[in-house]
Length: 176
Image 1 (tube, rainbow, N blue to C red):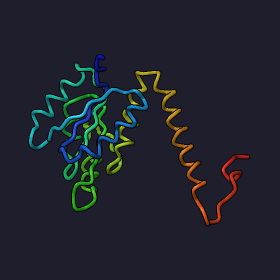
Image 2: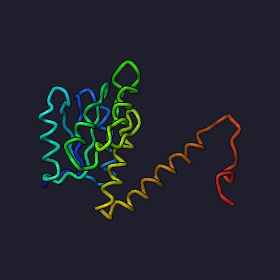
Image 3: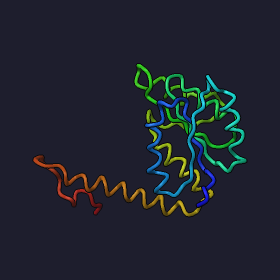
């Protein structure tokens, strides 16, 4: 079996972020999107970050995701060295619940764009990367529709789990 070339590259600032970011696996598997994940620190191994990012387009990577906590410099450093789309995941790693990371990722200077998801927003980062890939992969449109339907049905079916409380009838959720 040959390994597919990764379309999405994920960099973590620290191994401690690995358990959180592995949640992309479910999303990428559903969409049959190829990806890879590694660790490179904006502060401790900046040369590794730059080399990875500069080599990414030649290797077939079309979207980069960078996850980091605290000062969360990694997404900005990644974006500073590429023209590929970069999605930043601010990680709750400090004493203020990840707000420092969120502000670091969201407040990039002009000319260094990074799309930011919410704190620990791994699934949204993965879905956003899939939507970007959808611009060049027509097969993803149908899968995105199926994903949305699956998520809608999960919410609808959760209504039946409300017991012992007054609930509206099902027709309350249909347009007339």
